[in-house]
Amino acid sequence: MTMSGLSARLPRWLLPHSLSVRLVLLFTVSTAIVFLLLGAILQQMLRIEFTQRDTDELEARVKVVVHHFSEIGGPQDLAANIPRFADVAIEQARVQIGLLQQELWLLRPKDSVIGIVTRVGVGRLVGHGALEYVGEQGRRWWLVAVAHRWADTGAAPVYAVIAIDVTDATNVQEHFRTALWLSGLAGIMLMATLAWWAARRGLAPLGWVATEAERVTAQRLGQALSMEDAPTEVRGMVSSINRMLERLGESFNSLEQFSADIAHELRTPVNSLLLQTQVTLARERSTDEYREALHASLEELEHLHRMVSDMLFIARAERDMTRIARVPVHLGREVEEVVEYFEPLVAERGQEITVSGDATVTGDRVMIRRAITNLLSNAVRYAPPASPIAVRITARADAVFLAVENRCEPISEHELARLFDRFVRRGDEPGAAAEGTGLGLAIVRSIMTLHGGRASAHARTGGVVFELEWPVEQGGSGITQM
Ligand SMILES: Nc1ncnc2c1ncn2[C@@H]1O[C@H](COP(=O)(O)OP(=O)(O)OP(=O)(O)O)[C@@H](O)[C@H]1O
Ligand SMILES: [Mg+2]
Image 1 (cartoon, rainbow, N blue to C red):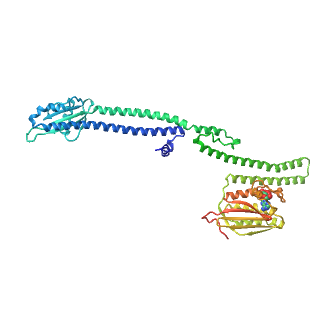
Image 2 (cartoon, rainbow, N blue to C red):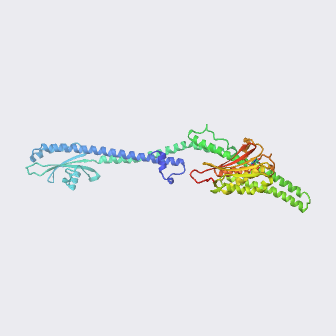
Image 3 (cartoon, rainbow, N blue to C red):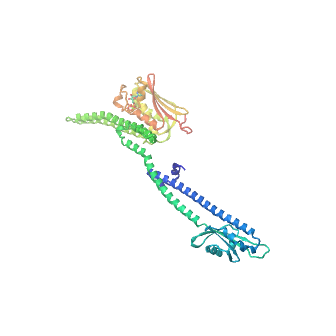
């Protein structure tokens, strides 16, 4: 199992927060598992080896005894052959042999072996393989007996008992097990220390990133962490951080631009308010004069109020803080109501608005209405008097369009693209600078972005067309053409 595989399998609470501790733990646990497995295998091999050796020894002796019995003609020759049986175990303290006939030992093995045979009964030692028995002083014996009868003689059977002392083999195995445990423990501790050292060394690049990140400040957002100095392992991370810094830098710049814009735009009306008030207060005035001055201030204040709430709307929309409703909105009906609202102004200027087509989109009714109002108020305000204004609604399979077209001085494509930015006014058309704040189209763009759509402007001969586009949700009943 790989380290990552192991860590993926462990429950979260088992993994500490420190990466080093985590690595050391995983490493140590893996090492311990390997040691335990190896130890178990070695121990098993040793046991099999010893068992095989003792079994072989026992079997060899059984063969010799059987052979001896076969060579003895009858019970009368047995006594003469006892030394041959004694030879089976000669000079081998580990091996004992005894001959037993009717409770009588013709050849005596060690007393402890006699004791065991008396206790278990010689019958149980015949034909079942070796019997293991722990005798006096905790010594461990393997015993087996061979029975021999002489047919037609009527003599009692003779039992040859062969015993092997396997205590030493057992002791060796036990010592081996203890040694294995101790060395395993020492090995695990050594591995833990090495793992700690390796983890510290291996994680050093993270420290580098931390040091580099310390240098980043708002003024130096644009300065990326240097890739050349970065250790190879953290290059990917560094490039992600750099991309993040870039995005942060952009947001930061637009925020800075935003506050600069506000300060700049607020200065003029606030200055004029200040000036007006100072002039009014410079000497005694009649009630009518004061009323007039307050009226003038009110106009400025209304303008300021509108600008501040527009800015707030755009700021919230850009930060994605505005939740929009998703209901069916009949564009035709909305346009009709807005046109009705502008009717008196349009009549006064001698203009004429024509509306064609209809479609339904999904979105926020109040916002969509605001976008339409902004476009139409621009058209009425910036188109020359007695000129036509056309509103066209078209629905395609993939999108719905609302276009407002009017006559005006030619505008270059470059300028058209900029009209949607905040506080952009062309200023050469009649009545522009006086009333507009230059936020109307920026709001239209924000509204369309919130709806997942687009707002654009295109030049026409002798005029301009502003177009809103709503994408149609595939599979949904987003639009119906009428
Ligand atoms: N229909 C139009 N025809 C000609 N010029 C237009 C039209 N709509 C907008 N413009 C130009 O684009 C500029 C920006 O318009 P926008 O609506 O953003 O601001 P505004 O009308 O000046 O102020 P506000 O809408 O905030 O009162 C206008 O000042 C005007 O120069
Ligand atoms: Mg406007």
